[in-house]
Amino acid sequence: MDTLWSVRRPVSDLRPGDHACLAYAGEDEFQHVVGAYVRGGLRAREAVLYLTGDAAAAVPGVPPRAAHRLLTVIAADEGPRARLDPEAVRDALAAEVARADRHGVRAVRIIADLTWALRRPDGLEVLLACEEHLERITAPSTRVTAICPLDRRRCDAADLEALRARHAVRAAPDPEFEDPVLTIVRTFQPAGLSLSGELDASRHAVLDQALAILPAGRDIHLDMAGLGFIDLGAINLLADVAGRAGTGSVVLDRMAPEMRAVLDTVGWARLPGLRVGAPA
Image (tube, rainbow, N blue to C red):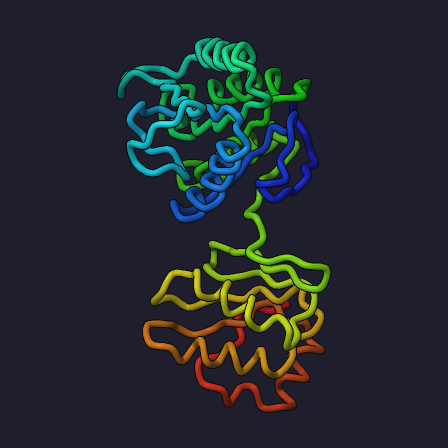
C-alpha cells in the first residue's frame, strides 16, 4: 500500500489495524517511543513481538535479559551474509499471532525493527516486501497493531520516503503533560520540548518537571510555534533552568512575532541563559 497522506498519533494512541512508522534520528528517541509502546502492551497483557536482526538484541522498554511470557523476540536474520526473507518474516509473524490467539491473548503488538536490511543487496526491495506482508497482517485486523522504526541514519532520503509511503500512520512521542490548556511533548532533534496552548502560573510546576527529564549538559530547545500565551513567571522559570549547573542555554524556537514583541518590551533578553533560536 502506497499512501500520500498519514495520520500522526502519539504511540499510546495506536490502535488495532494501525501499521505505523517511526522515523527516528537517535537511540534516545527510539528507546523513548518504542519503549513506551512495549511497556504499554505488556501492562495491558497483550502479546509483544519484537522483530529484529539480532536475537540477542535488548528489547526497548524492558530491562536487559528480562523474561516475560508475553514477549517474543523473532530473529529475522541469521548472520552478516544472510538475506532478509520476506516470506519467512510473514510466516513467523503469522505463527506468533496464531499462537497468541490460541492462548486467549486479546491483542498483539508488533515492532518490526528492520532498517538494518538496507545495507544488504536489494535491501529496499526486500524491506518493502516485508512492509507489504505487515500491512496484510495488520490492516484488516481488530487485534494487531504494528510499528516500524526507521533509523534515519541508515536511510537516504529516497529510501526513507519510499518506506514512509507504506504507512498510513506516523507514531509520535506521548505527551509529557496534556490538559485542555497546555500540551508538552518531548523533542529529540533538537533536544527539548514542544509547547502548545497556554502556559500560565498554574502550570509552571509541570513545565519544570518536563524540563527535568531532559539530558543534562545540552542546550534545551523549546518549540513555541503552538504556544499562544506565556506568562512572565514562566520566562523567569526558564532563566532559572538555564542558570543551573550543567545546563546549556534555553533556546526559544519559532516564537510568534507578537509574543517576541511582548517579551522584548519587558526586557526578557536581559535574562541570562535565554536566547532566540529558529524563527517562526
